[in-house]
Image (cartoon, rainbow, N blue to C red; front, top):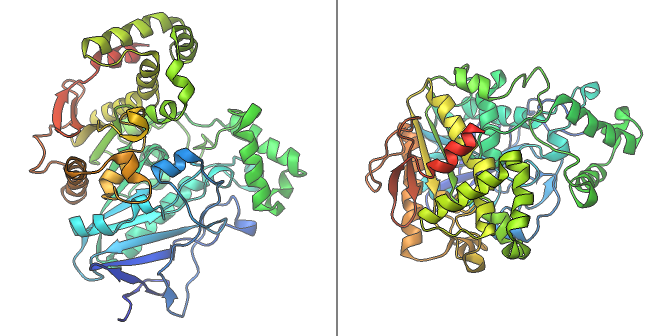
Length: 496
């Protein structure tokens, strides 16, 4: 059978077909960021004259191999290279249908991950919704977030990669049967945090028409001073800033690993840098003012027990006592720590939830890192835009005897209907209840992409989010809408 073909402005591609869905993998959306292009803004990809094979994924961004946690949640990256600026497209047809387009920005702390992960294989999503699905790679870690002005590196090259990919979609997706005027960007964890930055960046204005942020929203920037200090440590190791483009990529990656592990842990961060040009202020400002996103439909949410992924994988946390909890909570609440512990314990007790120290810590960290930033993002955007919806994913993972709870990353395979891939049955569970929850969540995402409203007939009426009612869809075996869930904790944290 002749492979499906499509013509782009750079050249023709030969893809593959499975179950009526066409797939084109490893499409370059920018030139390889190697040699002199390392730590520079992405440059245009070069055209090709021969028919290009698009049946295999391009290399993922350089990263070090994940641990058992990465295997459990399914973020394997496959082959990696500094030459990584590729994207992948799944489509029901390269025709004139003008289907909604979904562009996924992967998570992984901006250190790991890929657009080629099995858990985000786009065939089922494209088929279920008659949509075009795009997944992208972008530079990670030191390669995407090194602030070194002497090299022309803002520290936001990874965000510029994402913008370049979105501009490619605007320019090329019509050839794949997609509507360039209906592009929804969605992503989880670091992908969600990065989307919040894109919502605030002038350089990304007009790149997408709707946004879905999963377990990611507003987050503190790396300051110029912090970024420069990290760059200086690389320069000191390798003979000066001017030498860094000549350093082997593997050596840079190994130093990154050293800075983020062992006794040096937390001495470096790799993420959006407030460089003063591309990123000049906290994202809350532009989002709250609606500088670039006024009227943009937004679907935003989190899992109920985000932090359970980390505590559940750490068996020592099962013995956390009051003194240990107080020491940890001090980082979040300072002088208000005793009050915070009492409030969380009493609020959970009234709801019939566990008040074990480990579970109190999960709730506190979930609120601090994920739920409260999501609420604040929704409030800010909702101050000028009506179309905002909030969800809380509350299905409990059966893995590790339920210790993970409704943890971080658990919701991803439910959106993509990849519950049966690799280790994901262990993480997500199996059976009709799990499959129906996946169908309901996937249909919400597809409805949002098509109509910019996630409501559909297999969900209860889902009101828009506002700062008064705080209507939140709770996704579980029984999907329900709650007004202001866990509001005692929210109000306490908001008042600090």
